[in-house]
Length: 217
Image (cartoon, rainbow, N blue to C red):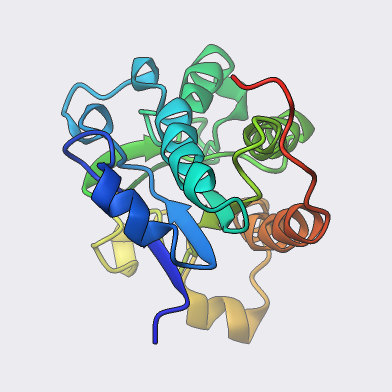
């Protein structure tokens, strides 16, 4: 029997019937593609994906305040429909770069050539954590789902569907090699930090749940 729901509605706001169903689950995560804007080819920070996710979770909380509501964002890919991406664009030093100084690019969720967070920078770590904390401050979010695991990319193609091998493997992030040679380079280390952040964020936020704020945004 399902014990949680992880979803989004790409066509627009989640309707009443769907909210009723979602409110029956003990845990609900709303995904990065809530609403049509983030799914469009012209997606940008103007979409304000954060606002759309929180609005959906607000609807769930209104029906069942005991549901643990979870805000989705990615711990590697800087999806363009989030306000967070707009901040990173203004501070490109927070993007991961290769040894030649080029911005590292990856794909995922049907989107190609996205920049990657550089968690070796304290400012990037702070910004990433603030994204989750700000969501919880709305009173409608209990924790955050920090997605992504890296298993051998990014590659020169900027498409993580392409195997990391030979000339195509610019960053040498092959998982087998990393396990056998303990390949902890300055590029690998920033990409290993997100799973640790996920544990910290979910543990601290979900266990220490605070009552909804009296002022609604």
